[in-house]
Length: 453
Image 1 (tube, one colour):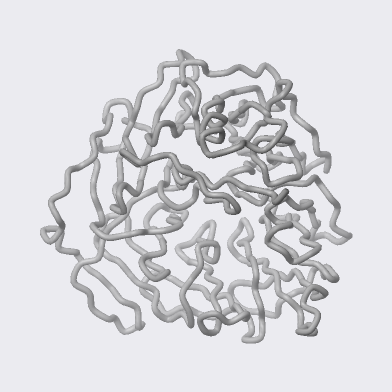
Image 2 (cartoon, one colour):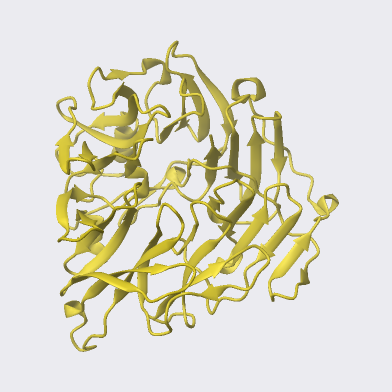
C-alpha cells in the first residue's frame, strides 16, 4: 500500500513566538539600493471590507496576533486593543519577524521576498536576488535586523547561494558561487551560519552524492567544513541554543519519500567528535520545542508519515546527551509539544491511535475530532486534559503570561485559562472554510498566522 500523509488545509496556520504586523503596498518607487520601497502607503485606496470581529477584552495583554483571512492580512494587537487590516492583496506566505519585532519578512505573489516595517510606514521588496525565494529558504538573524536567504543563481537552477539582506539595502552574498546550499541555520549569537552543501558528484549516479556541513562567519571569512555524510543527504534542524552543537537529520536516499517517513536526528558537538544519534523524528518544526533555558528539546518521535500511529514525545537533554520517552496513555499519539514560558510545564495534543489507514476523508475528519489539549509537568508527569477546550484541537501554544494556552479549533483562535478552564474565542481566521484534506503532502502551520508573546 502506498504510504499516505495528510495535509489539512485548516492547519495552514503558524503560531510562532515573535511579533506580528502586516502592511500592504501602496504607491512604489525604486530606491538607490535597487529595492522597491513603499513609504507611507495610502490606506484610502483599500477596498471596503468588513473587519473581523474579535474579543478584545479576552486578548488584552496577550501580545499581537497577525493572521491571513481570505487572503487579507490582519493584526490583532492586545497591547492597544485594535485590529487592523494591512493588506488587500495576497497571499502572503511564511511570515517571519525580526527579533525586535520591528520588521516582518514574508513571501508575496510570485515568491517575492518582502520586508515591511511593523508600524506600516515602509515596505521593501528585496529585488537584488538572482531568483525567487522558496518558503523554507529565508530566516531572520536571532539578534539583528538581517535576513539570510538561500536562492538559486537563476530560476530552477540546482545551485543555491546564501545572501544577507537588510531592510533598504542590496543583498550581499556570503557563500561562494559554486555552492549548492540545501539548508541553513543561524547560530544563536547571530555571528555564524551553518549550511549544507552538496559536493560535486557524478550526474549519472546522483543517489551516491555526498553532503557536507559547513559553518561560515557572517562578517566574512573562510567556511569551515565540520562533517561529510557519504552517499547521503544532510538536513539541518538547527543549532543547540547554547551554540555548542548542531542538530541535523541524515537522509540516506536523498529522497522526499524517506523524509516524509521521518529521519534519524543527530547531534554534532562543535568541540570535536562524531555526530551521535538521538531518535527518529519528523522534520516539521512545529513538532520540536526547546525549553526556555535551552537545555531540553521536546520532539515528536516515531517512524512513519502517518500522524495517527506510532507518534510519541521524547525529551533530549543536551547536558547529558540522553533521550527519554515521555509517558502517554495507551492507544494514543502525542503531537505539537510546547514549553510554558517558565519551563515548569509542557502542553501537547493527544489523539486516538489508529491501527490502519482511515478509509476516506470522512474517517480522517472523525479522527481529527479526537485531538484534545493536555498539559503536564516538565518531564511528562501529572498530565491532565483541559476538558473545557473540547476536542478537535489543531495547534496550541502557551500564552505570554503562562496562565493561558492559545489554540486553533473550528477555524478560529481560542484562548483558555489553564487554571479555571474557561475557553473564549478570540477571532475567526478562516470563516466558512470547508474541512478538506490532501494526501502525499503536509501543509506546515507556518504560513498564515503569527503570534508574539
